[in-house]
Length: 203
Image (cartoon, rainbow, N blue to C red; front, side):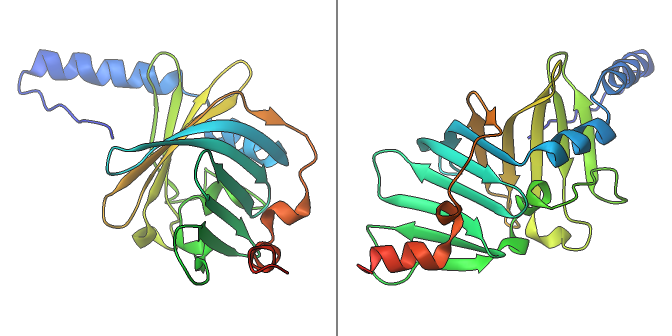
């Protein structure tokens, strides 16, 4: 989460404004970031997740755009997948069916859209460069109440490095990606919620 510093001295404020302008000038353009995401069909990466309570999880994430993602967690019978416009959380420690909710209720949907357009009016609320990476904070302008996603990209070539989801209550979950491998084949069953339910029920 970014911290805004307010300076009372005019000279300091002017210097800060100049620095911010320079940082923005070096940020990867939104059109280029949208094109990068739209060119991504499949991707796989190890990840480290920092949860809102400070605990840390690791695993492997599989992305199949549009609309599909799967998080396999290490050392735990926990699986989160999105497919068929739904998100399902499978927790082997809990009884009963998986928790499910519409994909539209998570800001992650923004990068899973068939046509990502970060330049859409009201989509991006912050677009900065810290000297190494470009950070973009985006939210669905039609559903701003579901939270936001902060995306971090490195340049030359552009690569997605991490995201931070802030939910409607302000809780944050950070996902840091390892080496993102694009273009491989991922089985369709990895994103089938009914198939996973059937398999866990012994079908």
